[in-house]
Image (cartoon, rainbow, N blue to C red; front, top):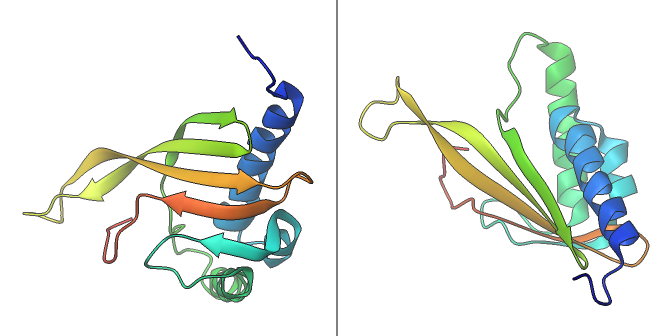
Length: 137
């Protein structure tokens, strides 16, 4: 039962979250940070400073590094499991390879998530994930 849910809006937000991930996190497009994230963007990751401007500058730097060293692999190797939207929230779940604590030369497959809250206009206003300070991914 969908009740009062706006399924079209939820699907729009789900697609926007996937587009944002590709443009910002994979492609390092600094302009995409400004397109997809609200000026008052709230970041709940304790390893990342708050606010849209920090992310915008960080993506600019990553883009410059990629241009200078194109052979360097991407910083994320997350593989999408599912993208689920409900209300103003979208959750992306991932598989990723994580170094074994006892032997970093070996890896195991772990799960991870990113959750985004959207405003009425389809802009991301808030982000949560499972990253802890010093986490390997």
